[in-house]
Length: 255
Ligand SMILES: [Zn+2]
Image (cartoon, rainbow, N blue to C red):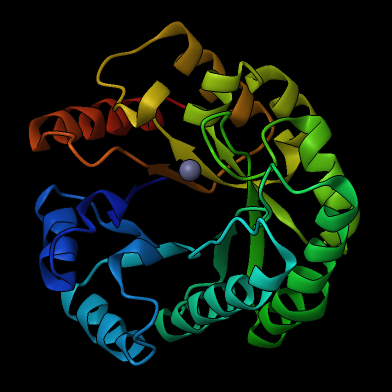
């Protein structure tokens, strides 16, 4: 498994400052979160490409910009966010893009299906295929406005959008909050292709915890060897991030 840091927590810094902060903490790998760019400025994609190359960081994955569509009229914007994120992934040479369902949990079921179809099957999935990029659906928390927090909800989404190639991004923080860790692991353990790692409320793990150890062991036994992406909240102090990095450097070396 490869330790990585999501740059989302530094999204208020400049792009250069953002990636410099990841590097300064000693990470070699980064998950690029589209929060770090203004989606409305399409040409920022080239700036991101240059800045990442200059940083020397290895970008393993990219978190798409997302709109949890509440009304069908918003489908166009969700599609645009998805496509500009895929364009950014292409520019960075990244072949794994993290998606949410892109539909609000408040949207009624029949409209959910229609919007999922229009967003993914009509637009985002064929575009990703054309670019050779794998999509990976993330489990959400009950605090999210989006749909897709447990096996039932994810199965409903996958029944519409999965053509057999959709991966799963397992967010441990979300699954601890929804108490769905075991159910999700049992169902999706073997198709996980990215892990978002944090304790509840996106706080960093800084010392071993039974729920963390058990998760890592189960994940390992599923044969997982992809990214472990620390995804932490904005106000996390740098010392805490460094402690979390040290913990995972050790945990991963013991697996
Ligand atoms: Zn996440």
